[in-house]
Amino acid sequence: MAVASVMVPVDLEPGSRGRVAVARSVAARFSARLVGVAAREALPVRLYGKGAYVTTRIVGEEDARAAADLARAERVFRDGAGPQADVAWRARSGDLMAFLTEQARAADLVVVGRQPANDDDGWCAGLAPGELILRLGRPVLIVPPGVAALAAARIVVAWKDTREARRAVRDALPFLAAARSVCIATVGPEAAPDGAEDVADHLARHGVAGLRLARPQAAGSVAQALVALAHREEADLIVAGAYGHSRLRERIFGSVTRQLLAATPVCCLMSH
Image (cartoon, rainbow, N blue to C red):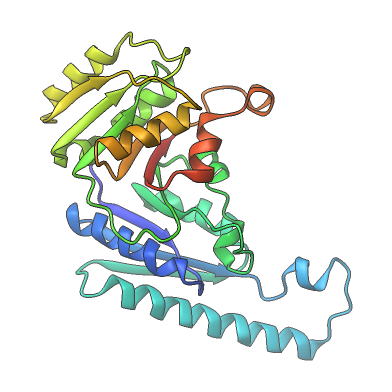
């Protein structure tokens, strides 16, 4: 897999600048196009309610406000993109989740933010990363709040012999091939080390260097063990398959994916 197009959703909240900075650095690394995406509902239901009485004047004012906000979002994106040679902007009035899902057909990688708990005003606040991973059909790079850079020189791969993990390793190949160190980790009772050596051999044949295997003990949750390992390895990227169980089992027994999405302080590249 080659990364030829990196897509990032943008709004007017401070977190957008960090996302754009990370997306810009990834696009520059792979000489890829950087695509900014924004959508804003002129008359969101959460503010006006279903069946609310809305006058022509209100419609006109809100349409104008939405258009102005989208223009401001484009400036945020272009300022953050800097002198990037290949940049594109896509925006329209409407639901951002639906628009991003549609536009992802033109992306190899989508960079999204993990919204802080107190951020419920930005357009991107409604983009649940877990839902995007399931809907987009593309690898998703999740950027935690406060992160504005991704070196990806040292990477931790969360290995479990599942379809999702195999897909994540494949999707992450451009990052893995460019890294100085890649640690393939099997954590937890369900993640037997079977297959990890095959994965290391497969990656070596793709030119991935600095490979090693690890089986850290999960004193807490699997997600906590992966984050602790990333700290020890001085890694700023975790690669993992997402949602390997049914939705019912995820709800009953919990989910490593959900735990990583909720609290990891480093970027995660996830595929389903």
